[in-house]
Image (cartoon, rainbow, N blue to C red; front, side, top):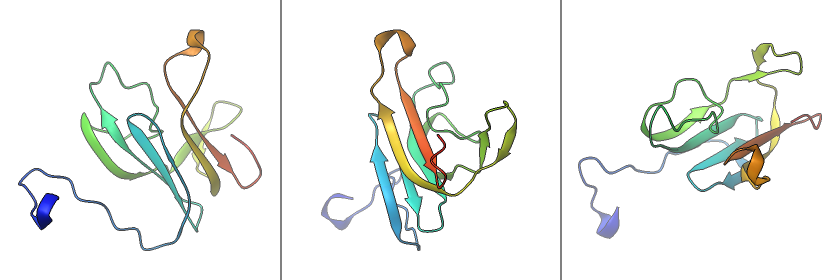
Length: 113
């Protein structure tokens, strides 16, 4: 907080015990990858209507979402599986105007997106 004081509803940074190996920030969301390959998403979701999956999490809420683990992904066959270890994060990747507003990517240790 400003001046060392915290307001009642003011968010404070979350402490991550492990080393951070990658970090990427989009316009309203960020990804962090720790040394174990776990990806965490944080960001602001304006409404249920506006959420398009850009945080990559299921247990989101309207408003601020802080440090949520990305523990499931969808594989090439469309099946939900446990998330692999990640090495790179790209939040808010620029895309052509006809493909939607915002995209995010996490890259695993084998180079899969």
